[in-house]
Length: 341
Image (cartoon, rainbow, N blue to C red; front, side, top):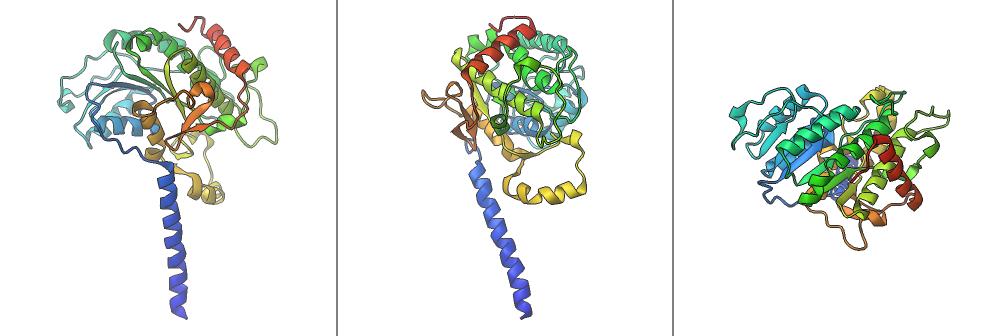
């Protein structure tokens, strides 16, 4: 009888392991390992989480990666960490800390003191100007950086932080780079989320903080910013840009560090995590796919409300409003103080 007490938990554990592995296979992995030599990728928020894993994978395929980060020390630490694993490609930390040229296997790129803070228009404009001057032929802009916070915060221009960073900062950045993007037919990758399906755009309070109601269980401002990302990609594609939008899935990163979860949250969340949670490396697969391999078709594209989920074009289940998509573009132009093109 005692043997059954051993075999039963072992069997259950083995079954759970197999199911989890099947789930990971369902999430998808980029299998293309072809060289990306001489191709340049610009990644916002490349020092941590999904951005870091995306940069890591592209460097392993010999790409040149520009780390566009707010914290230059963390950017350099990320570069050093990847350098320990691979000698491929080049990585450029666009900040005020000079790189160790001994780590480059090819000629080191020129360095310009610069950083990218998406919560500051001045920083975005400075970054765009330096990037265009030094790397005017980049192949892909990956609008990855994002945040989620619990409390009221604002950007330098006094926009609510989720809207200001997740959407408006990337809108301004892409606008400032639009001439180079058009000239080189560069890809633009927008990291959205399936949470956009739970959101709407509150034009009466656009860019403003609205306190949550007592019954709200999700972050309204974050969800709305992800819908704004989705609409941004939708309109980009309609305007002739090679735009790709995706949901990376629920990923284990430091993204929700502001929430400071307690031990019992982990206990309550564990069943959901077991079924849905992905590693940062797995979540990055959707970004890598969009940056390198994804193909928009006449039917399946951001303009027709498709986004990449599990490496496949998937129709959004949200209430996508065409008039809101167009209006958000117009209102965003007003807020950044310039026409996009």
